[in-house]
Length: 94
Image (cartoon, rainbow, N blue to C red; front, side, top):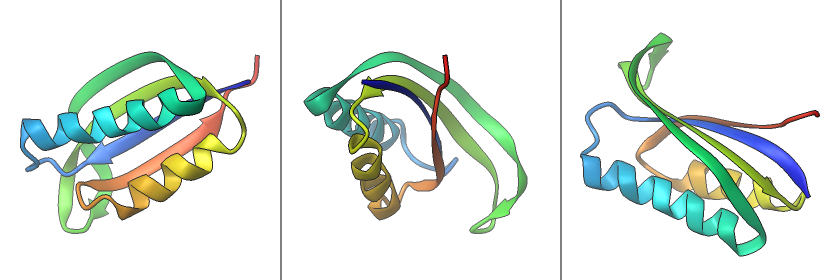
């Protein structure tokens, strides 16, 4: 099992329910073959550059451990999501 960090940015005009549903979806995917260690919601922050005409986004950081195949599944699901404008998954070295 490897440790990973996932940071994703949700559109700022997204309702609280939909933001929560994205987080719950990520948690459910991770819990199938891994474990969520920590979720840190940073809230609305200014973006470095406009993305899809948005200048702000709702940031969420998820730390988890899983097999090496799981980040590909999370990546696929976040690409499909209409509410997520950017995401990044990185492996954490210890």
